[in-house]
Image (cartoon, rainbow, N blue to C red; front, top):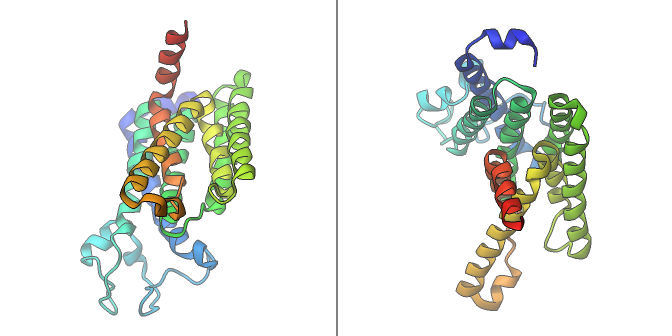
Length: 259
């Protein structure tokens, strides 16, 4: 990025990334609740799902408001689900870790974007078996732009990663639509855009973990396991986070074995 960024200590950018992650995590909780129900993400204002009371600004401070209120609505006393602070903390941690690991660079921003985007993806897919395109598609476009900015001469790498990963999952979706959703294709587009060549070990890990879980279900439930729907988004997210940090090393290890 630009030279002025080097003038501030890394800790400053990590802290800033954590704050931005908290803010995005707060928005992610809104998406996780409203998007699967086909509700507007903008209107009405944030409110209690039980008593419908509009929340004040002081009740919308990420994590802190939940802790001060004891995890309950100030109006009706209804319990506020613990997933809200967990999503906010998770987003903050992933954003901060990305900047700490890759620095305040275009790549660091892309890694932070990937991390915070994966939080609502995992939550929504686990609960509703859906991938939120409203998050994934804009993140894929922004992630691709950031990765191209990080290495303009190698612009084709994130483009190839995005096209290759999405194309591969798309073919699987065409072959077996009952076992693979089109949302997984969109998610693969995001992973390829940010990870580039490292999307290969990410997909390998995702399919390996998915196969392992499938084997466990088959042992425990027998033939009935074939009818059990297991969301694939969390496996893709886990593989992506591992590949984000160790993907190049994994590719290098495999290349050495081939040599």
